[in-house]
Image (tube, rainbow, N blue to C red; front, side, top):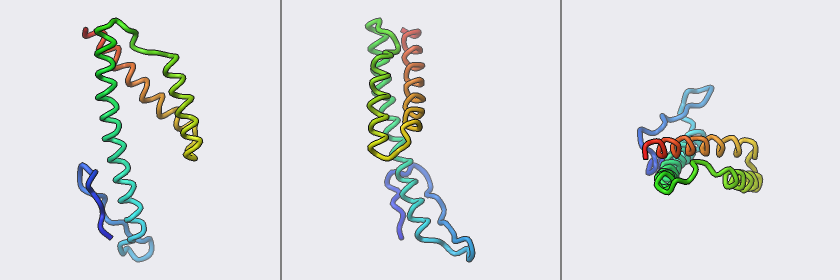
Length: 116
């Protein structure tokens, strides 16, 4: 089984071995290759999201808008909790994840406002 490392930014995870023999376990290696590719995609998607929110923060700083928009944040959290439920992902986990991102974005926006 060949590992697709097209999204990976570094060396691939070493082959997995079976518990009893120490021989490479192709099933586990395949799962881990998929996880590695998903992790790489997540990083690239987060980087793109932060490029866009950086532009939003700069715009807000230029136009004297507040760094946060609590109404939008709550709408986003509600929307993403529903998406998490539809995807069979724990909505509490989804909310914690998006709140972490929102808090980081607000911090960046506040920094942009202070630097303007």
